[in-house]
Length: 316
Image (cartoon, rainbow, N blue to C red):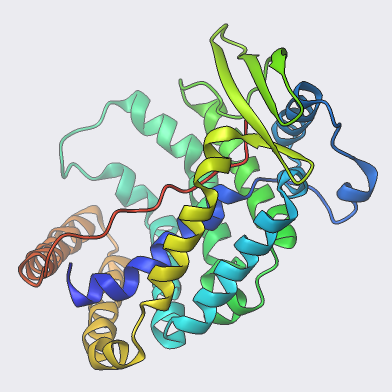
């Protein structure tokens, strides 16, 4: 694993971890108006229906209190460990990428690089474009997008606002695709239950039937697989963040900032294109430094990367 990848890897892991550990929509008053039933089937059905309706805060409410504390602690630890300038500029670059892509949408849809696309596919992408850009910019304007935001991270607020918006965009994108909506919900049936375990049968709108085991943790029903791996995943993520060396970070910061500057220059060239030909030339010109960077990263590898922790999810 290269030094650069070692520095940036925990940040990517954190973003994936928090994103999948939370849920979707609602305002701050939801938790006071809606409680989660004690029965396992009723609890999971309530969570799923609320999520499908756009209430992401229900997923935060559905998490055991210790899980909530873990998620907040991971985010805040990351905010303290990362180099703020690198982290913030990296997310700033991603936000600019979204802006440039939105500005140059016509050229992106019109390029023949990589082969001609069917008119139907282009029309589908164009219809989904606002949601694609909106989804991306929601992340780049969230509390995950700055070291300061991470240090003050509040999981409930994150789920009630940022992830709520992401779910709305996900719903929009699902409507425009031929894939089933991942948030569509059918029915839940209790097959077997003890005091702290339950087996549930969930039937999706397309008729697919899944059986899943749940465990009761601190008065909350969560998937048994999640409950059995949570502590390990949290420990692994904390270890990765704690392993960030300030000395190593400082030593490699000029290289990382140079990479960011290079990509900013590439975006400037793409942004300046005023015709399809200029855009295609700028895009082709960007391929060479990107490929060179990938080759350099491969050459710098110092062993295999550590196993990526499985990002847990509380969704049924």
